[in-house]
Image (tube, rainbow, N blue to C red; front, side, top):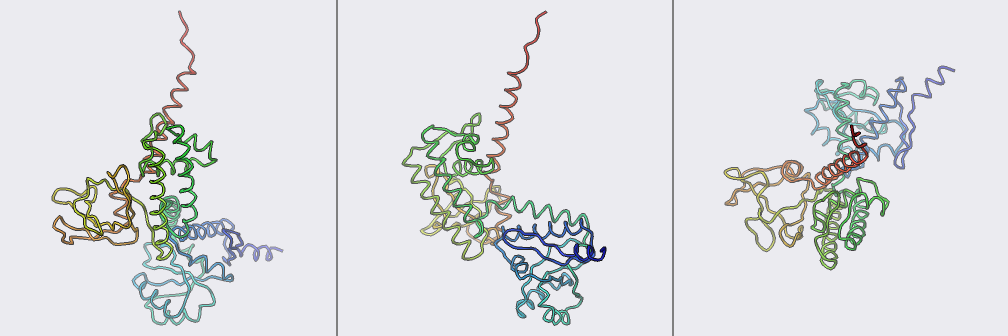
Length: 373
């Protein structure tokens, strides 16, 4: 009986996102098995936000998955050979940074082809997913899990093919909330939650986008004031939808990770028929650097004082000097995170501050008056 139980706990079977994770783990404990499932799901979520489907395809095939461990310096060679031999794989996060090894996960059916790869590598072996987790450093594993979960949250603004439907829902909600706000001339996050049956996160995101395109002004005691008329709003929302649709089309066709940004026109120093040259925020004086933005990927907002456009997180952008010499490069992700503020984060910050003040005011009102002596 104990042998049967031991065999039973060696198989993970979990239904997740329309697929079943069925994987042989070995003789690990139930806690180890749970950790393995959590880790796989985190990778699936991460790949989804990045527009990838490698791990999903592997799990859909069913059967056993195996791990190829090899010297990190051979990564490019492994990727090249895997493509040559037609091996479907997913690169696993490095959870042991001291051993100088990297891992990919692949389907057992590819073992003969993987063995051909091993013969051409300096140091490589086939292992199980269980071996991969056991070889990991606990602290490194925790860091990777935190990163993967953080990416899932942080990538809500990325316009990937997978996020297109969610983006369309937000766009529709923006129009409804905008029309509601037009009638009242102001709106709060709490009102949106109550009247449109949304979560706090969705309500804050809608407010943030409406602020970004110049429909609402910053909160005053939790109320965001309308700063344009109905006709201007309808034109603005139409332009926003067209730009958002373009971002989604590019993302779906080219597997791009796009994130929208706003640029004040004070930063624009030059333009031609096709593009505008804008100074990168935070880079000024002798260190001033500029990027060129394609006009077809931008729209005017805030009465023409600001442009709304987007960056490709994976693209390497050229940085120009004032006289248009290329003087450096920067990754789109670093450009966004280091130099363009997130409106959504600012809205959440202001909302929580307004919420705190309101709670403090209620507490003050409920406090009993001091007794007279």
